Length: 216
Image 1 (cartoon, rainbow, N blue to C red):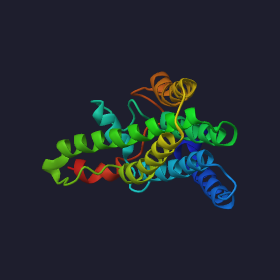
Image 2 (tube, rainbow, N blue to C red):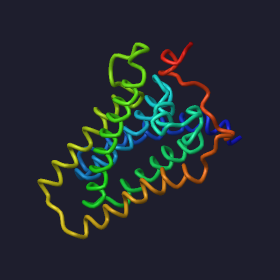
Image 3 (cartoon, rainbow, N blue to C red):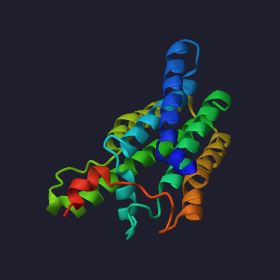
Image 4 (cartoon, rainbow, N blue to C red):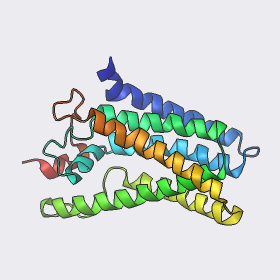
C-alpha cells in the first residue's frame, strides 16, 4: 500500500489540495489579507512544481542525485518515499500556516525559501548542462525550473515587496528561523538522511526528462 501511495496516489491527492486552495484563493480574494494571499498562492505553486518535477517532464530526482555524485541516481539519496514526505508534508505545513499562522515572520521564511528554490534549480541546471552538453543538451533547463522561476520567483518578489512596504521587527526573524528550520530540516534533511538507502524499496522508475541523454 505504501508503495502505491508513494508512486502516484499522493500526487493526485496533492493536485486536489492545490486545486482546492486555488479555488479558495479566488473565492476569498477580497476578504483575505495580503499575507494570506501570498501563503495560499504558495500552496497552489507547490503542486504545480511537483507536477513538473515528477511527471511533466519529470526526472528531478535524477539531477538531484547526480549532483550529489550518486552511483544510484534512480534511488539515492532521494527516493520516492523521501520526496513524497518532503513535498506532501510541505504542502500540508504551508496549508496549516496559511490558515492559522499568517504573520510577517512566515513571509520572511517564504521569501528566503523561494529564493533558494530559484538558486538551487539554477545550480542544478548548470550542472546538468555541463554534464550532458556533449550528448545534446542545449539549455540549463531541468525538471522544476519553470515553476521555480515563474512560481517561486513570483512568490519571492511578492513577499519581498510586502516586507519592504510593511517592515519587520526582530521577533519576525525569530519566527522565520523556526519556520525555515522546520521546512528544511523537518521535511528535507531529516527524512532523506533517515530513509536514504541504495537498496531502497522506493526507487524511481525512470530518468524521464534525462532519459534521452543517458540512452546508449
